Length: 448
Image (cartoon, rainbow, N blue to C red; front, side):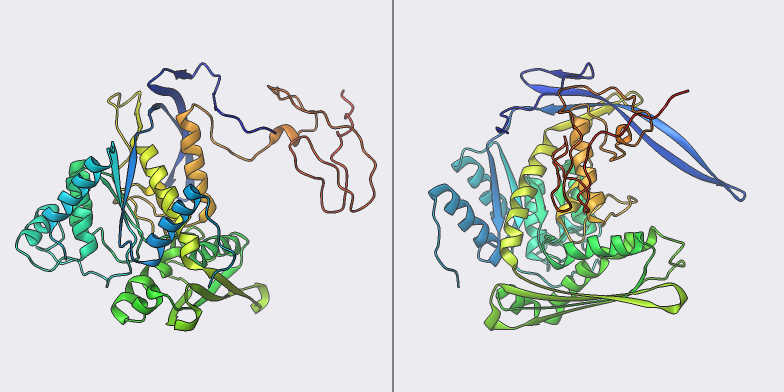
């Protein structure tokens, strides 16, 4: 099929103008309350109006820590794509100065927007200290007095003051409470922490699968070794602590989601090890062992080994973060109850799909399960053009007497005889089942 050049939703709930796409959207969810020994579920519905600006601005991404593996890899990839290059083989600046650099970058490149993306190596974990970095006022005072503030936090504050979104691609807690409060005051997007590329992305899928299948995961041991300057930096205990925190928290929401398996306060043993081995360079080795309890006292152990070029996994994530953040800056919405237009919360939790330790607004649930994160992005984008959420029910294919109306051209399947191993193609492009059974139309059931 030839690629389409435009995507248009034809619906009375969607209005296109040269400047915006405006969509009416019914947000349906449920609230749960406990009354005595009874759980009561109450369906709720809220009418939203989403408005998305159609004009795509000239966007610049300021990479902080360009000399690190991820920043230089992304730059090389962009240049190689632009110049059609290929290879046969592979083997404390101060706040005001940073703000000037951002303004100079914007003006010299003729940009409408700038997004600042921290790609530098891991810093040591930062303690949150009352009076120093716990509020926006205290953090700004600490900076003015010349007291110690991590470089990444300095860049975050400078970006927020310049009205530029700031994204933290490293594991340290750059966005301390004072920085988050400043982002809220200035209504500037921030997101983090730590690009979710290899081992942790697999973990966010596998643990969700194990717990969702009723296997009580009780031990997770993750070992890594790599030889680039990221690995060398992480060999220092203070920097490793930042990485350990971001890698270890990825299973928390999946454990809490199943109180049948896990008692309050119970969680798996989770050990993370990172070693520096110069010879392997950017070719990171990751080994994982997952042990789960089964019925009748049995156990199940899964062991995985993965080898990958770490920065090649991270570089596309950096592009996705910049593009998704910029799109979110063009979206506003309101409800029938609150008709004044508003944007997403400055702590842009929508980006959690791309971060190991996703930030969420205070009091909001933190979601780490990968496919729930992806589904969130997908369904919010569908809401922006007035489409219902993807529910994967496919009820029209599960009815004894199909009666749901279908709109649009659909190919008609016809009965096909085939040998085992020869699988026909279904109307949706999928094949038959693993035994080679035809995806032919089901026989009509008798009606009474």
